[in-house]
Image (cartoon, rainbow, N blue to C red; front, side, top):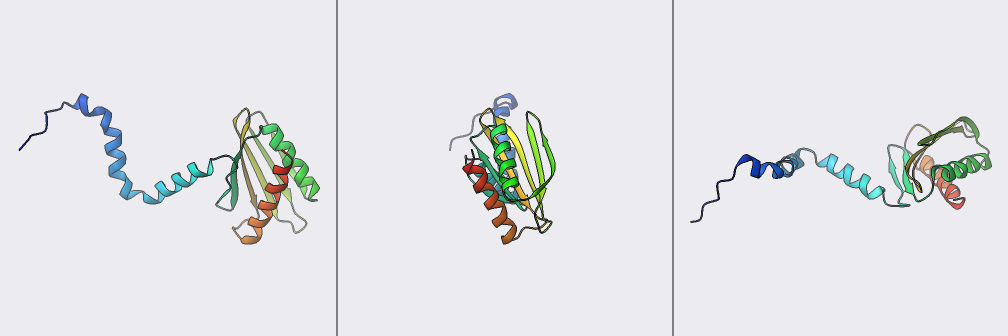
Length: 143
């Protein structure tokens, strides 16, 4: 029978993060699934729904995404209540005719890459998802 070589701690140190992560997987399977979903949702143009928000990352500049959202929201007849943007982030809040809150958040990921989050109303419902999807489709057509 062969014996394992005697390795020092310094030789095993590079393997410590892998061993720790492997040991914690059974304790955090829900988190692992959430992280996998977030990574999958980061693909360009992939839409996911997280906590009543449509979330996507599109190959478009923050300024262009912002203009598309502003034009879309105005075109749908929503009244804009908050309109804030800087070089890294943006926030557009509006109200529908039924007084439902619409929130669109932008996060610059690169010169031509922007994360967009659209939420409608307070709770996750098929009607709110449909409205968020409509806003997104009209925005994307304006990129």
